Image (cartoon, rainbow, N blue to C red; front, side):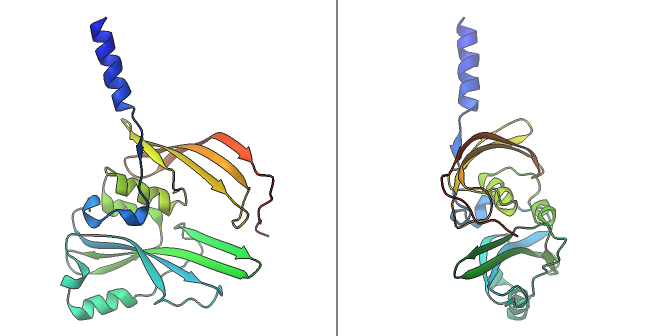
Length: 215
């Protein structure tokens, strides 16, 4: 009986849910970069006119490094910061459009990396960014996977599993966003390689207000 209680207690402790922070709350040391990577950065570009993207107008949403950016040669840093993004239509990396009565705002993400040979790489695929983290083994890396897949929300909580992570995501979609309005709770399973292997709706409360939908 005592053994059963001990095993049950250990199991319950192992199943404890933990909260995920917002992506910008994690510092560089919260990521484990793959061998051969010196600096990794994810940028979000924001613009109002679809065909008029300012390559210099972006926000760095995450950065992780073994060598800080300011430690590289000034010419290398200047080139790295000014490198134009790639918004190929086939790219699957976080693309969002929000349209209100006042107009539209478009957001798109690219990843940029400097390797240990000082070569610069640009990425517009989720898998290309994630592979430089190796196995997903920290909360920060898990949050980045969710964010890149447009699955990150304020109330995300997680627990480790034998195959990776399980995430419970709760959020409310309001009238300012595309899609269906309401309150949603999803369960997602994420593998150690950073792939979402399952997404299941657990709860849905419809909103009495309609959402803006894309044409």
